[in-house]
Amino acid sequence: MAPTIPTDLTEFVMLKGNGVKGLSEMGLKSLPSQYIQPLEERTGMINVVPQESIPIIDISNWDDPKVEDAICDAAEKWGFFQIINHGVPLQVLDNVKDATYRFYGLPPEEKVKYTKENSPSKHVRYGSSFSPDAEKALEWKDYLSLFYVSDDEAATMWPPACRDEALEYMKRSEIVIKQLLKALMKRLNVREIDDTNESLFMGSKRINLNYYPTCPNYDLTVAIGRHSDVSTLTFLLQDETGGLYVRAPDHHGWIHVPPISGAIVINIGDALQIMSNGRYKSIEHRVTANGSTTRVSVPIFVNPKPSDVVGPLLQVLANGEKAMYKNVLYSDYVKHFFRKPHDGKLTVEYAKMC
Ligand SMILES: COc1cc(/C=C/C(=O)SCCNC(=O)CCNC(=O)[C@H](O)C(C)(C)COP(=O)(O)OP(=O)(O)OC[C@H]2O[C@@H](n3cnc4c(N)ncnc43)[C@H](O)[C@@H]2OP(=O)(O)O)ccc1O
Ligand SMILES: O=C(O)CCC(=O)C(=O)O
Ligand SMILES: [Fe+2]
Image (cartoon, rainbow, N blue to C red; front, side):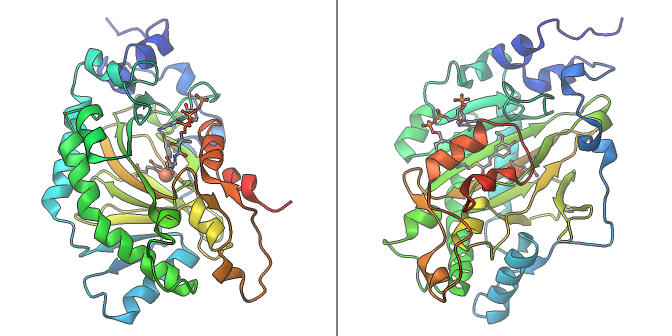
């Protein structure tokens, strides 16, 4: 007999902790109606530009000025690039992907302990879809979101199934993140990242473990809808499945980000677009659902501190350039993002000069 869709879908997916993983594993033959996206948003409707590709930058030699130039050029034109030979050991990347599978492999009764309603800390949250209370159509994705405060807090609050591997991945990425930010800041006439400005560029970090299970009628839904990240920059590990698409610079169509073994995808977030007064681009991206394979990805969102005020940098405006954005409290900006469904590039309007 064909499996039936649970009558109370929210209860099954969100409140009981089954996630879309639980739906997928029931072997449903058709997609529950709550996941059917408007026509133009569906995986099956995506207009791919096959001849285009985001830059792939070998960062093994930081002494070569061409490396810094390539990073800044990519941030200005594409807002997205991949880095190779970055020095984060492959084993660390493999371990965090394995840990992601380990967390999602836990029984729902274990995972449900980390939902918004039950989690022992507001810095740890297991959820499904992006903003289910506000979305008209749900997204085919489960996530575990971990906001880093301290090693001690992580040791007591983060799920043991993935805690050590997530922390190790964050720690080993730190040097590369700082190098990237240093290069990006240099072009904005910010000479050093030091105690006076480090908080603004990389004062807080959040790691998400994303899980996208096989989806029935995958062409009718999305894994993640069109959005830009609200970070300074995002340091993203994807597996070998593919499915991440970024908006083409001319805004016509979407460019696939091909999985490259050992590579990390870097994207500029809204906070850096605002600080650079629009010079660096926070580009819209989306993830398609997949009918035959489970996909995982692990972004580290590098952010200002919630209490920082974000606006165009004085160094950027020093030449008389007109400010395109106002100063906003970063936590207000992030709350605005989380309280609405994904809506492409609209979040940054919140900070636009009237
Ligand atoms: C999940 O799917 C996603 C996620 C993303 C993420 C892209 C990014 O760029 S994440 C980087 C965001 N930056 C930071 O987290 C650093 C700064 N942090 C803060 O300012 C605060 O920690 C805070 C996030 C604003 C939370 O502050 P707090 O005072 O604790 O406010 P709350 O009232 O608890 O939360 C506000 C509002 O947001 C919702 N929310 C909070 N955390 C998350 C989370 N991890 N995931 C989803 N939603 C979250 C919370 O429910 C509140 O909404 P209500 O409606 O319940 O009031 C990209 C794409 C994806 O698909
Ligand atoms: O899964 C991916 O490749 C991208 C995920 C993403 O865009 C996000 O978590 O903000
Ligand atoms: Fe994203």
